[in-house]
Image 1 (cartoon, rainbow, N blue to C red):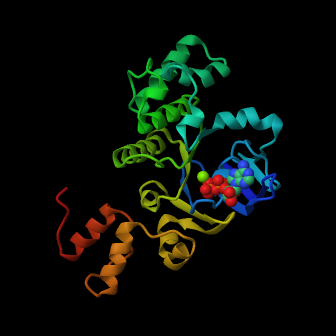
Image 2: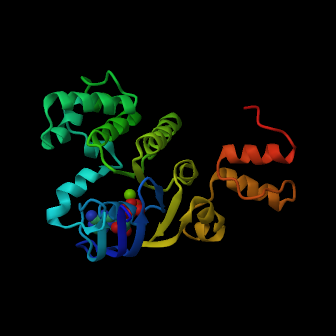
Image 3: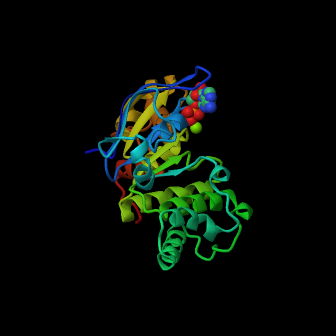
Length: 281
Ligand SMILES: Nc1ncnc2c1ncn2[C@@H]1O[C@H](COP(=O)(O)OP(=O)(O)O)[C@@H](O)[C@H]1O
Ligand SMILES: [Mg+2]
């Protein structure tokens, strides 16, 4: 059974904007799924369906096979942890400890269990020792990691992240990507993230749904989706930079690639293979 399953989901905002126009999407346990789309595609609207923040105007949203309706919301929100695009929308407490404790207190956990989970979540995100700081004085990357820790402490099965690398500097973005991959690999937590950052997708997704104007326009494995170059470009997106470079080199007849490299690591390996060299490490 899929963890999250959407069928023909539609959403109409009260002003008449049709943000979702029949979306089908499945997220299996332990997968890393990207929803890639330009601004205004409907990604943030879609993500609010996953834990019942919005109810669809049409179609069905199932979490572990059950419709996300009122008497299932509490359970769904425990299983599906949501990290918002802007941490300032999520953070509201005076200290990092209080921020993370808030959700746990609502679950009715004993104080010693609370402290354990706070310490554990901060350790996972690399912010041990930040307990007494104010979330508002932290850098953008640190704020995102506090927001992530507060969701992680609830031990969700799925992490849903809206633009996890948005508004971060290159080091902050690389840290979040590494961290989310480790959370998936070591804790077995499923990842679903929305982005318009095509370069981050091959680094952290197994499956990709490309979305535009409220619809899924193509989906499949990351390699399959990025092989549909014309379609990607037709929807105001681009290839990862390294895939574009490979395309130019091939077009000019300079180098051939067995398949389109999507990350610098893949390109390096393919190029070394061509000149018959092994990577140094
Ligand atoms: N509260 C709202 N009221 C009316 N229209 C909205 C609202 N929020 C978003 N929209 C519209 O819905 C569409 C999808 O928006 P959104 O889900 O935010 O896209 P994305 O996250 O992909 O940028 C856009 O046309 C946007 O203008
Ligand atoms: Mg958005």
